[in-house]
Image (cartoon, rainbow, N blue to C red; front, top):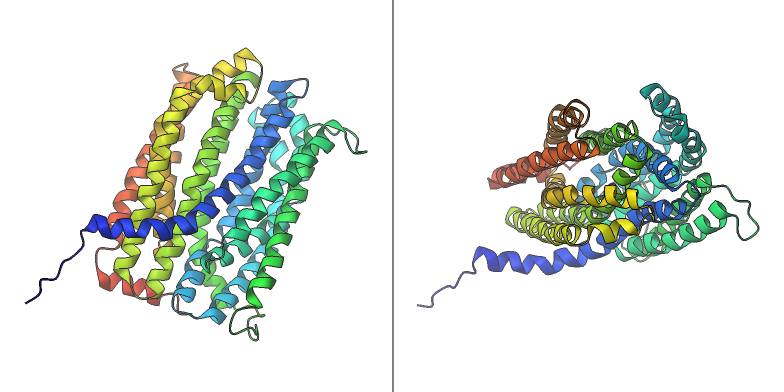
Length: 465
C-alpha cells in the first residue's frame, strides 16, 4: 500500500510566496511611488532660502490634507473585499457593479472633503501653530485640495484593478506620475519653463496635476482591460444600488476610521512637534518621511494580502486564505526588519539627503533611531490589517488603532514631550509604544480569525448582495 507523503506547513507556506510576491511587488513599487512624491516635494522645498520653515510648512500641510483625503480613500477599501470575492467566484458583472458604486461614493465625497480641508489653516492657528508655518502652508494646502476628485477616482479604479489581478499599470501610473511631479516641482517652485516662481504652493499644484495624470492612466487601463474580458457588456452595471453602497460603506467605514486614527495620530504628533519650533518639526518630518517610505512596501503587501485572502474565500478555500495571509505577513515583517537595520546603520547620511543644516541633520538622525525600533511592528500591523480586510474584518484594526494610538500612544507622547521635557524624542517614543501594541494585537486577531472552516464559509457568503 503506497504511503501518502504530506508536505509540512512551512513547505505549503513557501509555495504561497511566489504568487503573493507577483501581486505584491508592483503594488509595493506603486506605494513607494506614491510616497516618493511627498519626499521629492520635501527635498525640493528644502532648497528654498528658509529650509526649516519650508520643510515644516510643507510637511504639516501634507499631513493635514492626507488625514482627510486618505479617510475618503479608506471608505473605498470595501472594494478590496467585494471585488476580490466576486472575482474569486468568477462573477465579473458583480465586481463591475461594485466598481461603479465605488465611483459614486468617490464623487459624492469630494465636495465634503474639500470643504473640510479648507478649515485646517484656521484650526492650526487656534491650536497655537505659528503664523510663520501656517502662512505658507495655506496656499500649498489649497492647491492640494483641487486634486481631491482625481485622487479618489484613482483610489476606486486601483482597488478594482488590483482585486482582479491587474497590477502593473498601477505601478506604471505611480512611477511615471513621479516624473510629472518632479518636473512640475522644478518648474513651479523655482520658476522655470516660463512659469513664475511660486515657492511651496507650486509644489502643491504640481502634486495636483500628477494626481490628475494618475487617474487618467487608470481610466485608459480599465477601458483596455475590460474590452478583452467576457462578458464585455457592462449592461446593468451603470446604476447606483443603495444596498451595495451601504455594503461598501459598512466595510469601508471602519477601514477609513482605522486609517484616520493612524494618519491622524501622526498628524497630531506633527502638530505637537510644530509647537516646539521649526527645527524640531523639520527633524520630525525627515524621520516621518523615511518611516512612511519604508511603510509603503508592507502597505503594498497588505493590499496583496487582502486580494489573495478575499479571492481564496470567494473560491471557498479557507486553508488557501490562511496560507495567503501568513505568507504576506512573513514577507512584510522580513522587509521591515531590513529597513530597521538600515536606519540604525546610516541615520546621519539619510538625514543629510533632506537638508544641509547640521542642526536639522542631528535632529532627524536621532529620530530615525526611534523609527528603527518600531519598523518590524509597523510592517506586522499593516499586513495583518490587509489580511483581515480580505476576510471582511475591518473593525478589529480600527479598534486597535483607536485604543493604542489615541488612548495610550499620544497621551504618552504628550507626557514625555511637555511634562517630562523629552521634547520631540518623547513624541516618537509614544508613537513607538502605540505601534508595538497594534502589531501584537492584530497578529493575535489574525491567528484567531480563521480558526474554523465554518466561520470562513460564512464570511465568503456575506458578499452575496
